Length: 188
Ligand SMILES: Nc1ncnc2c1ncn2[C@@H]1O[C@H](COP(=O)(O)OP(=O)(O)OP(=O)(O)O)[C@@H](O)[C@H]1O
Image (cartoon, rainbow, N blue to C red):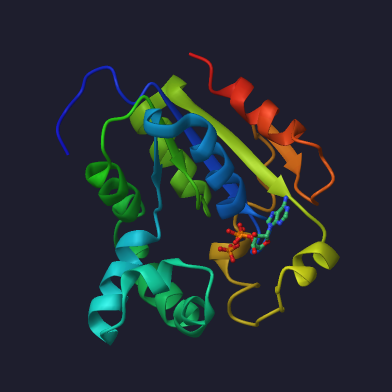
C-alpha cells in the first residue's frame, strides 16, 4: 500500500499464549497511539482465505467469538502447509497490505521464523514483546486446553525463545505499568 522510505520507523512484535491478552494490549496501544500506528496480523491472510472458503464474515472470524475456535485447527493445518513451502509467506502479505504508518504492531507473532523474517527485513526497527500470564488467569478468560492447538508449533515455538526486548505479565494487576513499558520501547 504505497511506499514510504521513512515508515514504518518502529515495529513491535507481540507474542504470547492463547488468551494472554495480545489483542487486549494491542487495543490499548492503538487507543494511545491513534493514527500513528497500524495493527498487522500475520494470521489475517489465512482467515481471509477461510472466510471466503466457508462463506462467513472475516470480521466474525477475527473477533474473539466462537467461530475463531471452530475453525482454528483447520486454519493451523493449512497455514503450516503454506509456511513449510515459504516461511515468510504470511509475514510478507501482512506487511505488503499495511499502510505506512510510523508504528506497526504485529499482534500475533508465533514462530522464530516470523521474528527472523522481520529482523532480516526491517533490522534495527524491530522490538519484541512477550506477554506472560499463568494458566489460571487464561482459564478465567475462557481458555480451555485443546490438543492439536495448544501443543502445536504455532502455540509453542516461541516458548524457548529468550531474546525478548521486553517481557510483561498481563494478569490484570499492573496498574498501567505494562503499557508504559511498551510505549517506552517505541521511542525512535
Ligand atoms: N489486562 C486485562 N484486563 C482485563 N481483561 C483482559 C486483560 N487482558 C486480557 N483480557 C481479556 O481476556 C480475554 C482474552 O484476551 P485477548 O483476546 O486479548 O487474548 P489473546 O492473547 O489475543 O487470545 P488469542 O490468542 O486466543 O487470540 C479478552 O476478553 C480480554 O478482554
